[in-house]
Length: 119
Image 1 (cartoon, one colour):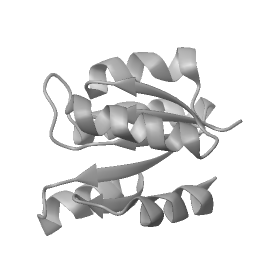
Image 2: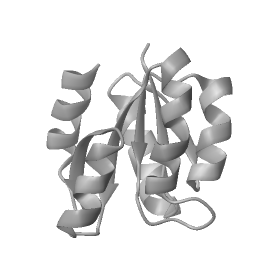
Image 3: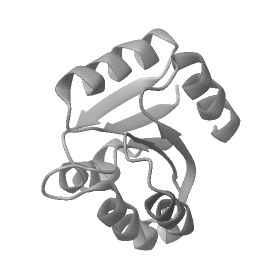
Image 4: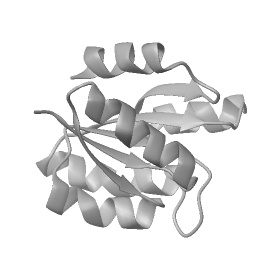
């Protein structure tokens, strides 16, 4: 079973994603920010990370920059889900490792397509 780490500060979104992805056969774990998500990388060892950008303590950009060192020993792809529709921020996320960026609100079927393509 593939593992997906969901880093999202909005509990309703995080819990909905966990529930929906579990129903589609994935093992999930949630984190309220990038700082907690970074700690979970070594214990949960996800096959994929879904991360928001704007979060307290450690946002998505800082998280992506932090995991670049981690990716050398344990490669993991990252999908960014964000309400921020700023071309510069989206370009930065992609340049530091996001494999795909989806704007909120997003459609579950489209997210599942991206997940399947990356896994």
